Image (cartoon, rainbow, N blue to C red; front, top):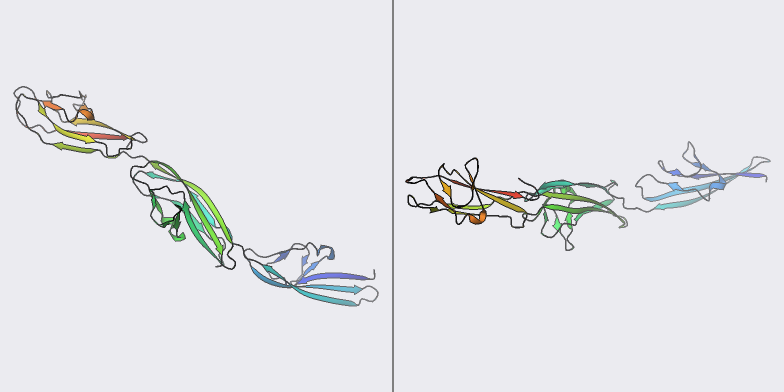
Length: 290
C-alpha cells in the first residue's frame, strides 16, 4: 500500500474523445485505473482508419516520491461503414396523357469521397416510362443521381389514377464494400382529362319540300369506358326541324349519338337556299370533367 498509480492514454488525436477520464492540456487523457476496463474511444463523424495510442502507467512510492513509468503502445482500427443517403420525395399530380415531373432528391451524407451512390425507382407499372434512366429486368429503373431533379413519368394513353412508387438510394463504401439502403415511398396522381371526340361531317344537298339526310358521325376516342359524349347540332334556323333529337331553348338540337347517321333536316315549305350548321360533340370524363 506504499505506492499509488496514475494512468494516462497518449496520442488521442484532436476531435477524438474517450468515454472516461479528462483531457489534459498536452492532449493526453488521465483515466482512473478503475475505468480502464470500460473506457471507449469515439472518433469524429465519418472517420475511418487506424489510430496509434499509448497507455502510460506511472507509479509513485509514497515514502520518497520515486516514480516508475511503463508505456505500451496499441492501435485502434476503425473500419469504414457506408452512411445512409439523404433522400427526399414528394407526392405529385398531373393530367392524363401528359408527362408528370417527379419531386425527388438524393445526396451522400458522407462527403469525404469514400462513398458512391446508386439510385433506383421501384414500382413503375408495365407500360409506364421515365424520361431518364434505364429499365431493369425486374421492372425497376436505374436513374443517375444528377437526373433525379428532372425525371418525369409518362403513363400509357388515357390512363388515370394513382401510381405508388419507391425511391431507393444505395450507398457503397469503397474501402470494404459495405452498403446502406434508404427507401422512401411516394405517389403520382394522374387526373383524367376528357379526350376530343372523333367527329366527321359532310356537306349535303336535296330538293325543296323534301327531308334531306345529313352526313354526320361522332365517336369517343377514349374507349376505356371512362368518358361519355353529348352531341348537338347548332345553327338550325327558326322553322326548320330535325327528324330526331330535341330543340333546346337556345335553338340548338340535342341528338343521340346513335341517331346521327339517320337524322334528316326539314326546311319550311317552299324554302330553297343554303343553311350552315355545326355539329358539336362534348366529351366528359366520369373521373373529372374538362
